[in-house]
Length: 347
Ligand code: DOR
Ligand code: ZN
Image (tube, rainbow, N blue to C red):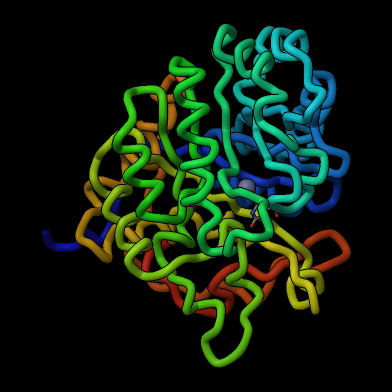
């Protein structure tokens, strides 16, 4: 296949996004809204979005921060804790919340209030299955005995398989998968299991964190893995299998908190998200598979209509800035100062 100079797709959605709040929200939201029609908004704020009321208030703040002229719909989620009630799930479904996020307690940024034992929330998962809310999982064990690079694979054995057996009809999204094990697990399941994939995990392996020194902007959770895992993810993303779809996991942190003795986890990709996915798909001559992955499969899995509008990418080299304004701070994107081959056309 020869590379086209321009690519027009159905307007895509981001099925996994961190927008934060306040000044940070105002700084990053335009980047996402320029490219994506909708995004699933992660609830790991401080304090977390644990109730329907908090989710509706957060939604209103997102809409208030949206620059005029940009058309964007935030899809809200609840943060599950040990004490989330089945009644809350009913209220969430009635209010239009689309999903709940399961963070194993201590697994990642602002997950301290997460679930300590998954069995504790079985009544809540039962209510979600009945009310049609999706379960989004940060699928890593927190057991300090388990090597950091094995935490996703061990989670599949310890938790994914029992969860699937107990709740066969619950729609589960295995978020930001990073391993061949996760790809194979999703492929082995029936229609109710899907996975999101980030651009960082499609483009990079774990060497990127250590080239010439420690590079904190390449550190996210789940952490980048070996090359054979990256190749398995790229094969899944470009396979036209509707169980694999786009979720950037774009996760902004002020630059001084990334470049720190104990740097925060998260790669900021929202400002160049579709450009990075196009680059990844082009690397295996699969640009013709990008539209399904970015704009069709996620909507279908969530039971939402596909978007009406379009997004155009042009094959035109451009340089990412060193940083973006981020409230009183600065935000360094992944691949800062590097040249990208694709560019979203804005006019
Ligand atoms: O790298 C990550 N950053 N992984 C997560 O799971 C959370 C996210 C964040 O909120 O910063
Ligand atoms: Zn995330």
